Figure 1: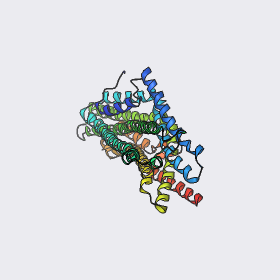
Figure 2 (figure 1 turned 180 degrees about the vertical axis):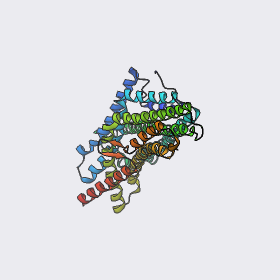
Figure 3 (figure 1 turned 180 degrees about the horizontal axis):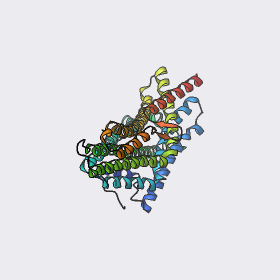
Figure 4 (figure 1 turned 60 degrees about the horizontal axis):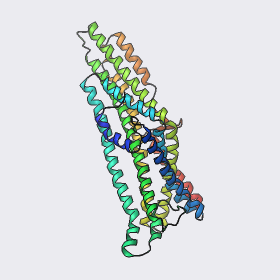
Length: 395
């Protein structure tokens, strides 16, 4: 398949094209684009560490640098998870199209399209939020410079204090416009990269939810054809084939999620570590600011980062919980159908399904972490625990 033809993916396609990750377009120009992206993003992260080389390494400076650095490292990890697995991402997109092409009736099409439209709404909401946040961030970063020009005063110190990057190892006054350009471009790239890969992952997970729901729908449709008075061989065959098709869709859904996680597993393990570290450090920055001097100006960055981190972790774990719930719903549907009026052959097939349902299905990240709402609670608890440790050590 040379290209996927799904209108629900239009926004995702544009976002992935912007960051050079659309798998159906990987020519020399796109490879050059990827290299340029990595150079700019890597330089942005590296220049944050230069603060530790040029300034006195106090605990406050270290925490401030690491809290922002790990946030952008998380963005780079997410970007790399797609960049280095572009063929696997393409194969997963092909599976989306194949699943759609193999649907049997309008009811199944409506189910899949419902989940695709939900993913599209997620994408649009997150895109609008990201655009507003980026616009606000760029405007705030330019405010001190605007004041400097308008009032003819030297407010470079104010400007530098707000900046995420603290040292470029050059004269800040002479190269202020280049610093602004580099920071805003790199920040834009990192946020859009996180948005493009994140929303595509949302599409994959919600597509899997749709596949599980189609499996439940097929079980229901198969069993509704059973009639207590008129049970014929033809009728029994339709039920049998319908249940087999439901099992096949359930198996494909499991395989789809397993394939997605096998591709992204190691990256997600590193991503979780970066997210928890950044959340703990930003939480400490907020607490220290509020408890000591209450500088609203310096609260902006850590608050935005912390809010973004927890929203990201919540959405990821919520969707993983939906995968688990939709998988369980298949077996709940099987349990609730009128299996007792079916033939012995069909009852054996249903028993096989119920036995499969006794084994819980979880999305395990890195062999350690189970993605779910309970997992989100554990990540939140871990972030608060590390924040407490940092606070105790600093005291």
